[in-house]
Image (cartoon, rainbow, N blue to C red):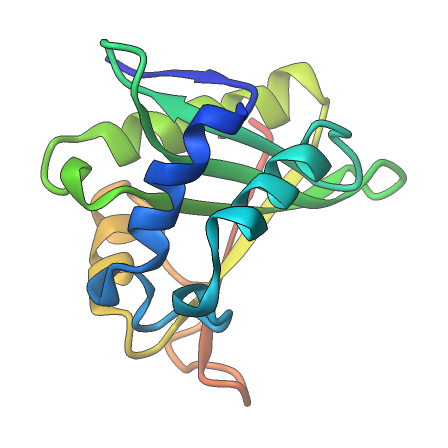
Amino acid sequence: MIQLRRLEPKDAVRMLEWMHDPDAVEHMHARFQDMTEADCLRFIRTAAQDRPDLHRAVEGPEGEYLGTVSLKSIDEAAKSAEFAIAMHPCTRGKGQAAQAMQAILKLGFQDLGLQKIYWCVDRQNLRARRFYEKQGYLPLSQDPDEKDLFWYEISAR
């Protein structure tokens, strides 16, 4: 079982581990492999502000950092945000990413009152696309956009 909590400086080392895992970042559009522990600590300090982005650590049963889930570009007028998730490689195949996704979506819809949460996935990121399909989410279109991205969107129920 996982829980969400604020990011803490102690998370930086394990955060850097997923950033430097070639399989984890292969299809991401940021250059995470170039990040340093100092970059992670800066991100954690900025994340404490909760706006315009809300980032939460995914914590395992022993208190260990397992990843980060985010609601980015929160638009209070439009009641929307962009979802993002990055999990440590040790979580693969254990269902923790699915739990983390459901927890941050619940936070967005119930606690923040969002009406729409969206995200995108690179066409070549087959692992992520299979993950979202397994969770019951299909892209808005069968064809990727001009940047080779598939877009997903869910609305409050």
